Image (cartoon, rainbow, N blue to C red; front, side, top):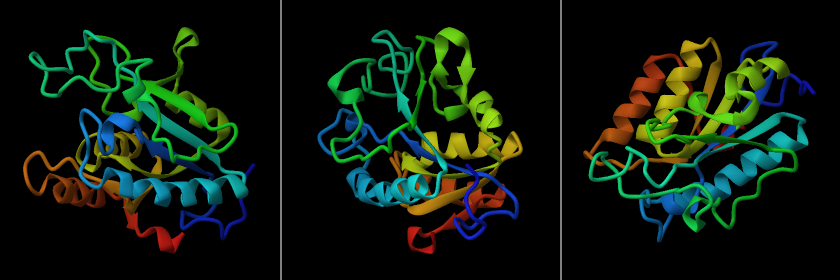
Length: 205
């Protein structure tokens, strides 16, 4: 259902979907790859998702869903083991409120795929249903996004979305960075802005 024109700050005539990125236990406090201040974004994204559901906008939630032998993990990759498919750490944060009917996008599902971008993920891997296909079927042209982490999966998803012709709005207070190198999060935000993404505070929604 297309929302009223005043529902979100977006290009005229665009149909909006919300994309909540990797709000999983392993990326939050106590997780194996905890993002500093990662828990802070949960209530913000809950408000955004609640508002989107009330307006009839489609809602998507991505999740890392790695096999145990993923090349993504040390010692061959750069990250500690995290978000192994079916594990407790791969579950969504206990306080996350996903709307009824939210579509789950699983990514990084093979040993050779890092799965940074949501556009590498599947809603239904058995039938080859990727995110872009589902968005196109719904007529979505504008994505509002937030989640974890700014300098990896958020950045990769936003840049991929824009390369595919989507308009993108990033919720600045609904993201948090790993900052493996100090300043990575700000550099990612600057890169997304330079590519044309709108960067707004959640209170502007």
